[in-house]
Length: 152
Image (tube, rainbow, N blue to C red):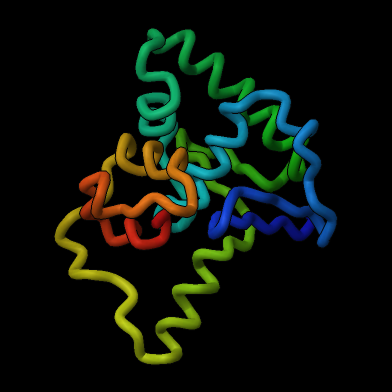
C-alpha cells in the first residue's frame, strides 16, 4: 500500500508517496469531503450511516448509499486503492494526517490538546468544519468539539 498523507491545516491537500494529488483527480467534490471528514474523525473512522447523513442528508437511503460508493471509488482512485477501507459498515482512512502530528507535538510540549471529552462532535458539525476556511474561527461558528481548534 502507498504512503498517503492528508493536509488539513492551511487548506486541503493530499499526497501519495510524497507526490501531490492533482486537483483533477478529485472528479467528485464529495470524494474530497469524504476524505476530509474521515481525516477529522476519531481514529479516522466513521460508520457509513454517519457519512451518508453528513454528505447526503437531502437524499434517500438508497441514493445516499449509491453516492457514498461513488465517492469512495473516486477517493480511492485519487489516493490509493487501500486508502479507504470499507468493512462492517465502517469507513476508515489509512493516511497520515497533519492534524494528528500537531496534536502529538503539542502533547510532547505539555500543551493541552483537548478539552474534557464530555462533548463529541456531531457528524454535521464535522462536515461544516470541513468546509471552513483557514481564517474562520471555531468559536464564531459555535463549535464546541474537542477538534474545533483544528479548523480555525
